[in-house]
Length: 126
Image (tube, rainbow, N blue to C red; front, side):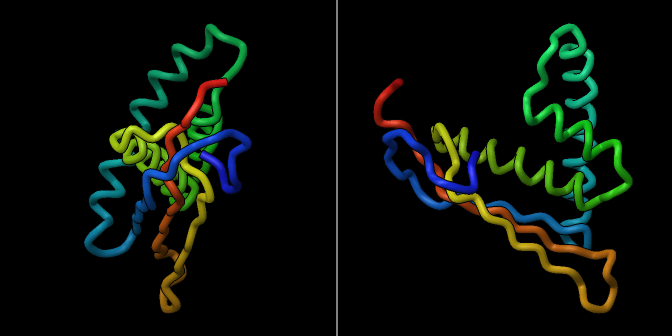
């Protein structure tokens, strides 16, 4: 996943999108996903303690779950879910990833997060 382009040949599969919120209808979905990834992170942390290097998912995931910020956790979850959607599309990467964050003007503790980009498949191997 990258916010820019790749320096390798690829074909475009199509746009890819995921959204999550901590307000209203989507709140229970966020809670379920937070629980899912917290369990996964705990398992990964135990496995990775044996190795010296940690991948981005584990590093950022552990960081986000150590904070009190529900937004940081939601951002991590959204990226993981976007990657899962890409995997189901048989994509090798997501390019041009962008985010849109909306805060409730009346109650600033509520947010709406959207991530989107372009799913691509590599056309040759390096």
